[in-house]
Length: 223
Image (cartoon, rainbow, N blue to C red):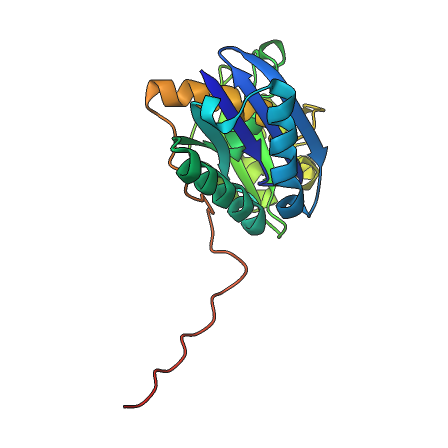
């Protein structure tokens, strides 16, 4: 199976090509903004590195949230457009899950993994996983102070929101990885979930309403 995966949901932009069980091309760049201009050139370059075209692909994988409202829209719009043009299925992957799966198995042993995504507000997006990365609940928004309820657990923190929750979980370990989703992980999860029939649809998982609101409808012309 040939999978194109990409991510623009948080503070990075990445793309990867996975063929069967191996990443054959991969690009990653930290990026607080500008993903809309960077994503398609990165996809084209990654596919060129792998020597594959859209007609060769079997699946597209993309992060669906939680994350930045604009970043999610960029990634999902691109995935839907490419899927429509190339008649490809799309597998959605949670950002919290992609972040947690970056932690090596040896580091997770005996710990509960807590993925923490910076929500750019006073709260954070969080999701807990057991040492085998089975979810221990759904992704949700939480005030950092709420997480003190988990202080008695043997936690391993991962994600770009760790600094916000660290004061409330002083005994937790911190995984020093990038803390943002990586398309290489998204590709592996997309392939696995698509084959198992458990992939999410390419629809945004916002957790909470976006910061922007649509304009009020214009009044219709009188007849």
